[in-house]
Length: 223
Length: 223
DNA sequence: CAACTATTCAAGTGATAACTTGAATATGTG
DNA sequence: CACATATTCAAGTTATCACTTGAATAGTTG
Image 1 (cartoon, rainbow over the protein chains, first blue to last red):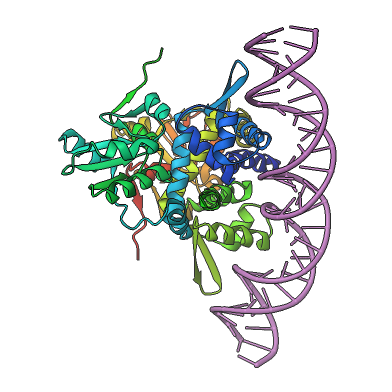
Image 2 (image 1 turned 45 degrees about the vertical axis):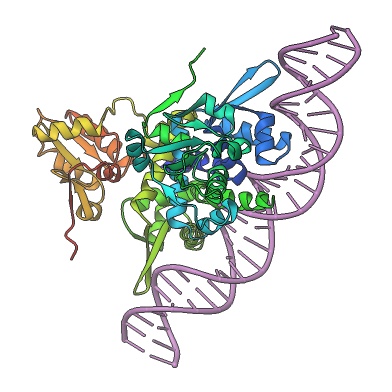
């Protein structure tokens, strides 16, 4: 039968979606876009690459259907094509954490020494929020907080965190969260807060994972 | 900060898991291993590649933690490292189907003209099985049926299907299933049965997806 | 232990990928 | 319409990948 070539073509096409996520730079892009739309220049800055190179990565992701673009005046904004793409990236990360030994070492190297940075699961956090038992800080840049945040969270971007810290109750526990499990902001925040003698832990996921799990959020009114 | 290099290394490592699935041949391998363990030679035959090349693909998948190997005498058997890897592959397929336009055309080319091959969802099938409303045929090779199959299914490998067909009731509907959504057996079976004037449809997924969804199965007793 | 089989390793080749540089395009502004 | 800005395209370089071929290794059998 002539199906040999057809089978190869089909699986090549299916695999090309995985291949699109198979570059560290494109993975960073998808991880970032899970927060929301960004312009090409913003993305380039965030991943420390030239604009031309970033644009090519974005075009490739768009060809594979993982992102979509929208022109607004002179800028082009890219975003994930669907929620499902964010889930795909989450599953990739999950398999990597479970099965690739080096990942946890590299995560420590990137996030900083994690001794002393304890984590809270989303489940536990939701329970304690319901009991009013905990102070929740969103330590991402304020624009991201405004676009959407966990219900009950207070915005405390890292540059302002030191001053916010002085207003926090010393007896209640503080939980910080940011973009995702591999986002440094929350780790930095927890270290800063603990240095000031506060009880602080980080949420083990970020805002996109929380929202995808269907847990309570507050999102920007669509104007 | 020196974290630039650490961030690159972390995301490269996470992305390498996706990259491992980013080759059509390795995707075929993972798709096949979702059925159960296979020796290197069996895998090579199934994906129409040389044994040496197949072995190298398998070693790479093993390095990335997606498969594990077990030596039995002179042969080495490979299998998925965990159920989670099967889910990862399913999510990749799902995103590809939703967002890559060419996939459905290539699927038609591989599976054959699909006009007339109607599908049944797992949900509908489970309901109708509970009502005893339908005859369910597992059209994979018999060894795979023996390793595990949908509860209530009868084994009817393609080579034997023609003779089985003559024993089937003409009034009840028949549903065929095989390895997965991109497995040709079920499509071939449905065409054969319909040519004989029987009412037949295919399940839109395969055995691994059915089992992962927690629907009723019968599995081989672990001796 | 020699012969055999299944698998893995090593070296080589052509194709593809990532990134750079510089030019081209598209949109908005004086 | 000249000019500025944001993005994309095209060409070129170096590294990596998929596959082949032939040899090496590990386990089994006479």
